[in-house]
Image (cartoon, rainbow, N blue to C red):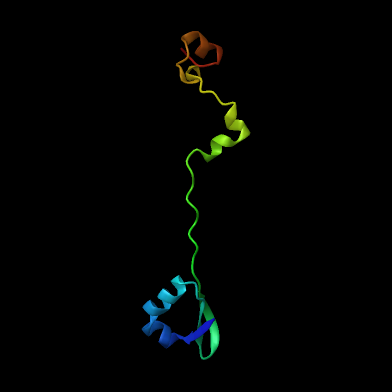
Length: 83
């Protein structure tokens, strides 16, 4: 791990970031005392569309369009809605 002081980090930031991209870790220090660490951020894996369909709850799922069909006046009255 390389240690640099704040002034050097400010003047050579682009070069330090290039080294971090290659996997090196860099410590930034003030008066010889470490205050920050530059490390590479690993990107999150891309999500695969349809991955949840393999779950047991989705295997038995069947879309029923009747669920979204409008209710008749009699059904609404039975549920307590005014006609």
